[in-house]
Length: 265
Image (cartoon, rainbow, N blue to C red; front, side):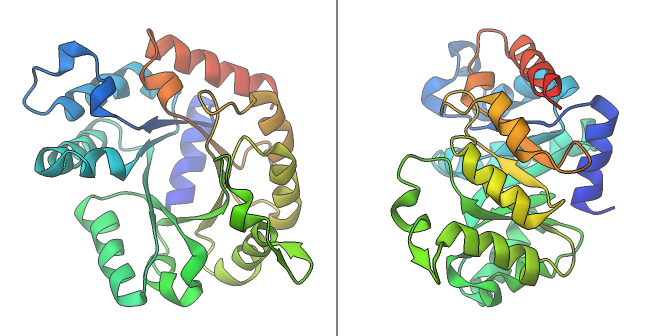
């Protein structure tokens, strides 16, 4: 089963487009978890059990695990093992924004897909298709290409005109028309740019789009859903991280967001 097939099955099973981002910043962990040998894993395990009923994907951000050294990497490995054993039907996304020369990308692909066992990974298109071939040729895995990111400074490069179009439109077009031969590509478009999301949807057809930026970053659910749904009433992976995992009640927050998304589908 491919990564996209896995995601679509989960979406149908739990009626949810919600992705929970495991941006488990050590400095924000509740004190009760700090006494564990592996605090990040203990926290992630709790969050997973609080939210899995409403989630179709989990997305650990590599930076928060790499920042904690050996214990952080071990916590990530343990988190992935826990998900494989207990929730194998939920898509896992490595938020690593990888992209380098082909030989280095090959090592990254091995680490992400084989060592850690992720279903999909976020990728930086700046080096071009050739550099990302080690990911793109893994037809059972998902390649989620940065297109229009959610940060305030995204336009510094992404809005630069190329042949009369902003660069983010060129990325969307390239991925949809040239890079997606295996049908395993997706795009990243931030919730903070709903007008651009609507334009990307018009250009890429039914392709699945990962949408970060809901919640803490200010993205609005109704705008995102109305702008981004595909013809099947799906095609979105709507991510919320800090607004869920550091909420007073992660379970209820995840349920409310899942229901809010469904209200506009």
